[in-house]
Amino acid sequence: MSSLVSDKPKAEAERAYDGPPDYRVVGQHGMFPELSHDEIARFNFLAHMNRHLSTQIMPGVKAAFDTRVEPQFKATQGRGFKDRHEVRKALLKDTMFQWWSALRRATMETRQQAGRWVTLRQADALNARAKALTNNDARLKLNPSLPLPRYVEAIDHHCMPGSYYTELSEGDVTGPCNYDIGIFATTGGMLGRYNDGGGQAIAAWVKKTLPGLKPRRILDIGAGLGHNVLPIAQAFPEAEVVAIDVGAPMLRYGLARAKTLGVDNVTFVQGDVSNLADLADESFDMIHSCMFLHETSFASMPKIFAETHRLLKQGGIVFHVEQPQYTPDMPLFEQAMRDWDAFYNNEPFWTKMHEVDLDTAMVAAGFAADKLIHGGVAAVVDPDVFPQAAEDTKQEDYGRKAAWHVVGAVK
Amino acid sequence: MSTIDPLALAGAKSKGKRPYFLDADVERLTNVVLVLTQELAVLRERTDTLERLLEQSGVLTRQEIETFSPTKQQADERGAWTQEYLARVFRILQQEREALTRDEASSEDVAEELAKV
Image (tube, rainbow over all chains, first blue to last red; front, side):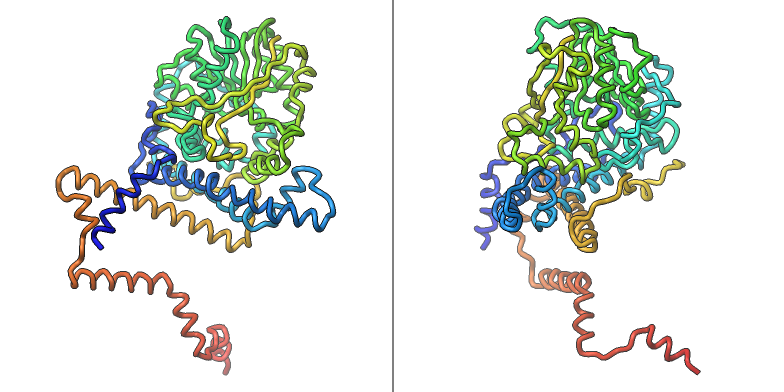
C-alpha cells in the first residue's frame, strides 16, 4: 500500500507539463495591485479552466458537429449549411455546444468577478497611485465632454462590467486595472509578462517588413490601457507616440502604467477615432490598431479608415491587427465557432467585421490598391516562461488564439 | 473609508442581456458549481503552499504526508467528520427520502385549517 502511494508523485512528474505558467510570472509594474495568495490562485484556476475548455472540451464540439449536428441537418433539410449562422443555430441545439458555451460564459463572468474583487477592494489606493503618477502631466489629455460612440455605449465588451469608460469614483482606474491583471486568465498566459505579446509582435513585424522605417510620429487608435503600444514606443524610442482611446480610466491608468515601466514617449489622448479633428492632416508616419476594429461598427469603420488616410503622411504606413477574416476557404464550422464571442461574449461587431472585405474598405478610404499590405503575426513572449501561440498546435481557441492577421497600406 | 463596496460591485452584471445555453436553472447551478470548483482549486493551492513551506523549513517532509497512516482513533475521528460532512451536503436527499413514507400537509394547507373558526 505505502509503495503505491510513494510512487504517485514520480508518475505525475513524468507527465510533460504543457499548461499555463503560474500567475506569478506576470510582470509587476508600478500600477499593479496587491494580490493575495488566494487571489493569484483564482487566476491560476481560471487560466487552467480556459485552457481545459479549449483543449479538452472544445474538440467535443467539433466531434458533435461532425457526427450528429451536420448529418442531422443534411438528413432533415436535404442540403448542407448555407452560412455560418445556420451552423451556429444548429449547434445551439446540441448538448456539447450548450455545455461548452455555458462553461465558457461562466468562466468569463467568474474571471471578471475575480479581477474586480482585487481592484475594488483597494480602489482608493490604486486611484491615489494613478493620481500621483499622472497629476499635471501633459501626456494625459482628457476630454470629459466627449460623447461615447454607440458601439461602446451599447454593450459592455467581453462581459467587462462598466466597459472602458465607467468611473465608480473620481479618478477611477479600477476598470483598466481589472482588465490588465485578468488578461492572463483569459489567454492562459499567451500574451506574455505584460500582456504585450501583440505589441511585441507588431514591433518585430514592422522592423522586419520595413527595415528602413524611422517614424517620427506614431498613432495608436483604440489603444485601451496601452499594453500593445508600449513595445512599439520602445522599439522607436525617438518617436513621439499618441495613443487614442475613448475611455478616460484606460488613459489615466495607461499613462501611470507606462511611466512605471519607464516608457516616456507616449501621450494618452481621449478621443473618438472616427473624428480626430484636433490632429493635423498628414501628421503621422505610422498609424495602427491592435484587436480594435471588431469593437467598432460598420458605420464607423469607413470613417476610421478615412481618418487614418487623412492623418497619414505621404509614404507613411497604416495597419490593423485582427483575427483572420471569414474568407470562403474558411470552413463554416470554424466561422460559426469564431462568431461565439460576437454573440455570447458581448463582441457584437465581431461577426460583421470579419466578413467585410477590408481591402475594398481601405481602397474606398483613399489608399491605392497596389499599396495594400497583408501579413501575419503571432504573440512574441519570453519562451522560457510563456506558452507560444505560433507553436501551439494543441488548441485552436477560435478567435482567442494569440495569432493574428495584418492588413494595411502605404500611402 | 472608501465609497466603493467590493462585495456589492465585484460581481456586477455587464451591460447586455445574458444568453442561456441550458435550462436556466441548470445553468445557474452550473455557475455556482464552477465557482465552488474554483474555490476548491484555491484551497488546494494554499494547502500545497503550506506543505512546501513546512518541508522547506524542516517541520516535516512531503513523504511524511504521503505515508501518513492515522491511528485507529484518528481514522475514526476523520471518518466521523466525513459522515457529518456528507450528511450536511446531501440533506435535501435525506429529506426527500423521509417524505416518501409520510403523508403530510403543507404549511399553507395547515394555515388555512388553523385560520378557520
